[in-house]
Image 1 (tube, rainbow, N blue to C red):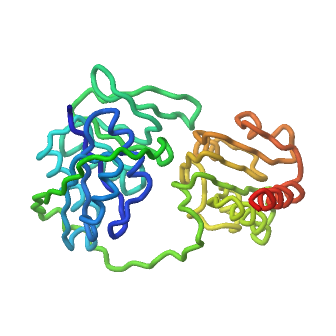
Image 2 (cartoon, one colour):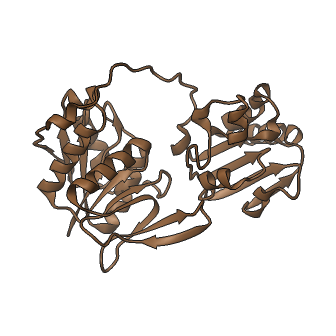
Image 3 (cartoon, one colour):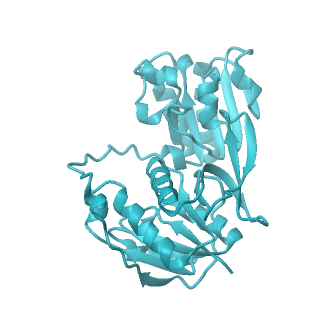
Length: 320
């Protein structure tokens, strides 16, 4: 059976959920071979093996922390040359898409970004994408070289499938290009205790209808009762009511949670492009003609200041 490279997103050996989702998808295409780089790479093996990795290629070097992207690209290229895989899968984060694009260029292959599903085809992997601001769903395959595919978080359920997970050291030699852009400093983002927006299973977002930064406490309360991440529309972000890092939309972050709750959001195409692939969409808006109601699974016509607190209390009551 063909091998499929999976780039591992981890923090000091703790594997992030999108990588485990990639392993589930990779098993549809062949035998997953994981590539873990940087500090703690060897500590990823147990989790990766539990979720289907037949082999884990690891490499640690100061370059991964000290320089931007290129060292990881060169390591992934080395893994590609060692394995000759049927496909390369990468999490669809901002960094992941840059790594994938640079790798595809180096190996002369086509690239597919932001896939939401994968299946095996007669002529190679077939990816499902949402395109043109999520107005259409397409089936796409790479016609040249080895497919390099980035996959959006929450595109597949994490499934345990124990495999050998044998650890092998990856031989990597960095070029002069790898040290062309140096990281001069880092500032840790203040933790809210909530899930990462792009990886969260539930997202609660507020828009223009929230009518002020102080009122986002209502949105946060509902999110916290559900264990959800907090998002915001571009209108809310541009008004200074919530940080840009939480913007959902075409010029913000794309999310695809199991449940998306939009409160006081009209549903402009820019916002819809960032959340339309959510599995279940709920909207709360006092305007019955708001465009958001065209795509929801459940809609509540009402004032969010009345509806959202009641919903929060009901969630807390049911949780006991």
